Image (spheres, helix red, strand yellow):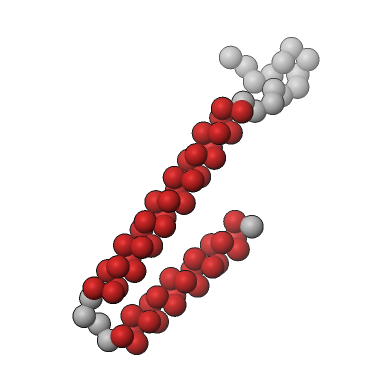
Length: 72
């Protein structure tokens, strides 16, 4: 099926496809958050000097802030 009408204009995107895209973006965000939480949990359960763990956590927070700015 063609995306063009007989007059040559594009059909508007399907609301269902937009909803699927929104759901996929939400799932990606959830997966990313779960991975970040697992990384933080791993840092907290390792026997590393506390200063090193604090620096790593600060790095994750900065990365998260940077990603949030890119989405805006």
